[in-house]
Length: 589
View 1 (cartoon, rainbow, N blue to C red):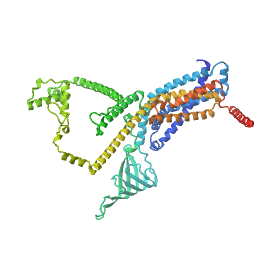
View 2: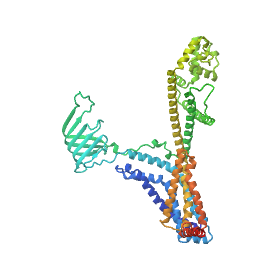
View 3: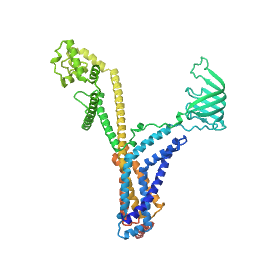
View 4: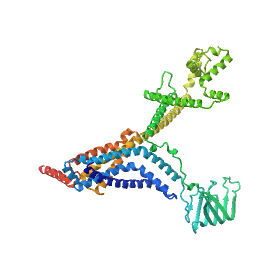
């Protein structure tokens, strides 16, 4: 590595680390404010907060890296331009692209590590974060009873203390007991009391002195019945035990969040996408199959068949499912074969469990032979076709044993010539009457409404499945786009710093915030389009990078020409030329 590369890279590393820490801290603060009311004030230990903050720092690092690269590149080349070091580099025959090379290689390596972090580290950290946040949310606030305020932290109890002598001694106590779920029917009043934890702070003992206990039975009585029972009990000392399990932090297992897309890497997301695609295709296939039965005007010669692409996907999915089922059956068979030898009764029981439907068909033939005196079972040749026909004949309510099934309906086989014309006219008059037409119209309208509701429900289900499918695709492509954003931000920040030639935290911070806001808005817009199905998910996730990449190329071209894009004198002279042109044109007129 040459001295120039060391100089430029060394001037970039320091601002990059500083800006990354600052940006990460800002994003951490913004992220923590969302959960401020849920995680603070619950008496958690210091290490719990350290663990949660460390999880947040790692999870927001993919968003902090592009902004840190943009700001540090602006500061680095702004300082080089402000101190005329960049001018000296160019005057020595070194082009701007050659000066950008060491930082460019560093950013490419950084983007590769950002991709690895997004794919492997961040999903595991998100899993830990979701689990810990859920545990903190389920934990009740710390036991802190204030004077003159009802405290509802203990489940099913509302406690008010008018005066506290210390953390243990309480004066003038009112307790509403809601354990019965009948409202404020049980009230306890006491002059004083002591609240002390015991048994490793798992329970709280409240000792009450010199008070009364009021209890009213809440019955919904009619007006003529006698009033509900009311009792008052005085006591000199009363002890109440409260469980403090709600105040402890119980850590749940990570398996509860196994279906969240934020905790999956690319391989797991692709597996879920394959499963979801097969589910969506199966849902559409059975919608086509079941829709035909909803229309009464469909006949045998008029079928509603699914499209070819749905049938092809269904065949592929069924073949994969059958292959997995065969593998499972082979594994079960091998496991059974590897078991210890069994006695005769156990082996017979196992064979009965492993019998297929062919064995039941054979038993059926044997029973029918014995009942109807048909040909002996030994003379029947059983194969797959005869078994299938036997199953169909058994499931058909109208069939003849070992005979042919008639395809004609009873109406078709009936002899209509025996019906008189007077009978036919009478039937026609019944069906053509006003009451029959009104009834038929009502039935048709209800059927149409039912079909419309069914179709709307099916459409909503398919839309929800497709939206979830697109969200998984967005989570897949974000692994790449967030890493590639570092390269895009470098291509914008480095040439822009060489153009403005201002270092420090003034102008670079302003331009960095502007471009980061634009990048964030374009990212949110593209992802929203992808979620709603307006555009393809791959285009929606890459939308921000595709929009800002030409901007970076433009700044790079202008920086190579030493253009004065942000020079006030340039725009002032341009304004004077435009003003002079219009003034001259007006004088000629």
